[in-house]
Length: 174
Image (cartoon, rainbow, N blue to C red; front, side):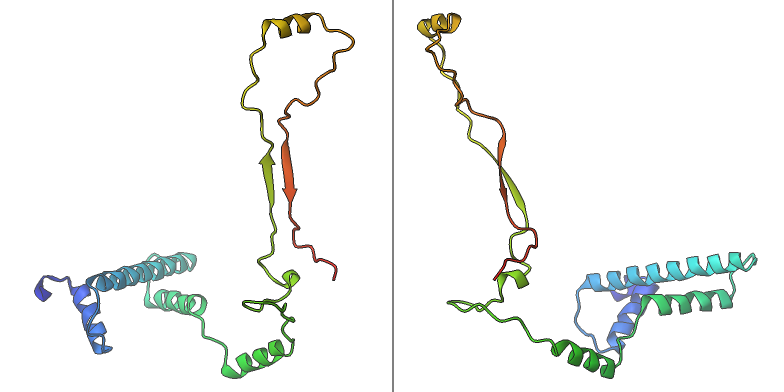
């Protein structure tokens, strides 16, 4: 019910109603209260710092005004004037877009002008033999007495990984 709400919640609801907001989720009131409390705590904390810096034992209205003004100056910024934005757009639009690569599908700019070209490295381990087969008695005898005609095995699986590289932002020659 409306009468069970705290005074601050009633104020937030009346502010929403005065702005023409009739339908909203109940948590909106709680979110505004959280924002409101956080802002007040920040302003009062800054006012206390200003008061201590001035050597005063209590916070006065000048400290609060200064804290609010510093919040407004550093937290809320106004967008630049329309003329400035138009001038920036004109300057930016003087540079032509890169030529697109012809083909089927969506036309895309050349790969060297995109941010989606591969720029990573993968380390792929080489396949290892599942397990070496057990030696038989004959192989053990041969291993105990190696002959000069026996070849040394060099095709044993190595545990070194295979590197696969992709260019890291390198432009390809045309």
